[in-house]
Image (cartoon, rainbow, N blue to C red; front, side, top):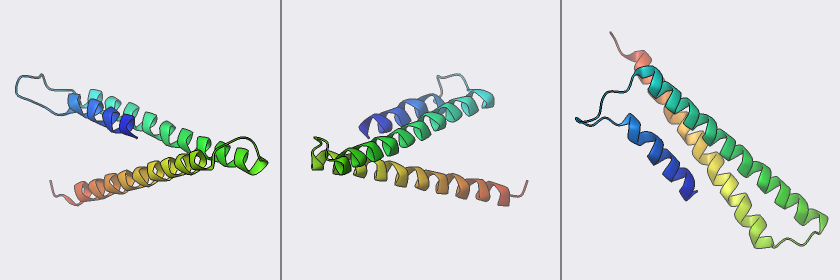
Length: 102
């Protein structure tokens, strides 16, 4: 999970503007956000697949430690919960923008 947080921080740095940085074009920001979002969704999916594989191995009686299965499951659960919350915040922001009068 720390890697995901670092990815978010690294992706957001170019988007955050400082006086000495040139402005980023909207299409560049959109592509950056899109690529970050795609990667984050792939990471969440991979965590879910890893959890399912570990659980399946445990159920088949293979040599898998129970604590590893539980840790993998919790990582997948937290990643999914985080993704859902980010989605909710994006939807809220979109709805707020749509309510703005121009």
